[in-house]
Length: 316
Image (cartoon, rainbow, N blue to C red; front, side):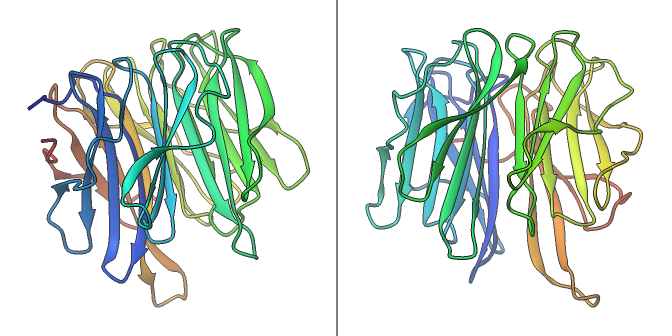
């Protein structure tokens, strides 16, 4: 049995179903296999029964999204020939299969990945995958419903090996945010809404970051947006924004991680509270020890205390 890779890339998403809130966290073992650990409703955490998702070069980026209460999942990574691989899980087939994106777009061999997906009012799903090209620009590939994949926007040059974070703002699905690290090691945000085009967002952090530092994000739309980073001191950090995110809090440090720890975050709906709003909890996954995934989280309000929820998720 292969152990989890030290400093394994991480990816996660969450969904709600009749079982309650579910979480899926992807990681890589020492042989390059991409696996998944799961939580459904009241738990406990368990290794996925769906088998190995695929195999990639060590420490390459992973991205995951899903819909239909977890019955449809998509995992993305860079394959051995530097092309993007799409692996698809469908409850109708009960196995992982290559998706139509596989082999269509070429990335830098050190590229990280991010993905977002959303449905329109007719229930048609849209997918956007972000990766780093060989010229170090950040690129977008798109699929609308059952149509063919096509090249989308190209963003300015990034730090080679930058991490990438992307999110579709809940309740406003045509509003996207993309984050990555510039060559000067600072992070930049790009946002778009509808057909308005991409523009530079207002996110910034006062902290200092090493090249390739991790960034990940979670949002419920309004009033909560959270951007998690790993700073030069190897600490998990959070920057919070509310409403239209025209302003952000000062970035604060939360806990120590292993050097240059990966990170992945998600927001999970728990139900409607007394004020008629969805009550969300945020979960962020990091490595505080080599080869282990730890879960940190908080409640639904901005400024709430973050705490360790689980020191080690199962990764067998």
